[in-house]
Image 1 (cartoon, rainbow, N blue to C red):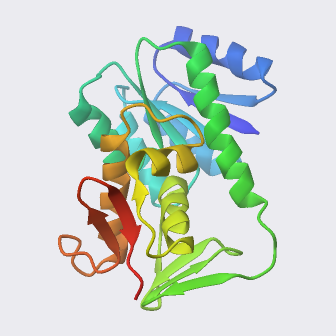
Image 2: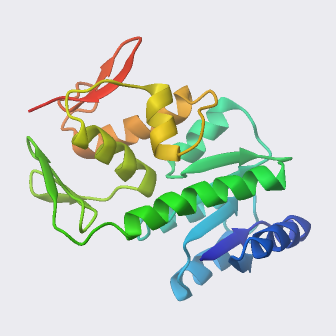
Length: 228
């Protein structure tokens, strides 16, 4: 597996390189957003760890460009720990958000979790299986989603959430359960994280995200995919 580490702090990059290589990953290094995008364009990258505050091109701007072409897992690093900053990172398409200073072993655990999900999706059975609900079609073989015939680009995490809800139409999932099933780890104050991803999915599949037809909130309980 190829992991890209992008941070203008060379000490952080070097430290993460050591930990990642100890786990058997190939590590690509970048020190600003432009270098990050060049490596992702030229190499097969399975996961990217990107700092927000960087010269030439900041991490969020780089993330926007990555999401135009790639659905690889992206973990954002930031010295900002406010919920609003985390939500901004998730809104821009990040799959996870880690604040500095961080425990390298925790970050490696998050890398493993993201790559585990990425690998599982990549090794799904080749048998064609299309889940339909109203105008939504989710092709598990091709990992494609269409709404009223139009292709919708989802991140890996968004796809996993939608797949969970599409496979269990009508069932209500708590926020904790969604987090534990999709992120494959125990929940830790997941409300904002799950809510941000749900909002992004609605923006992509609903005609009016403020009055959703498909992805419903059940107040005080969780979310469900309405049977259409």
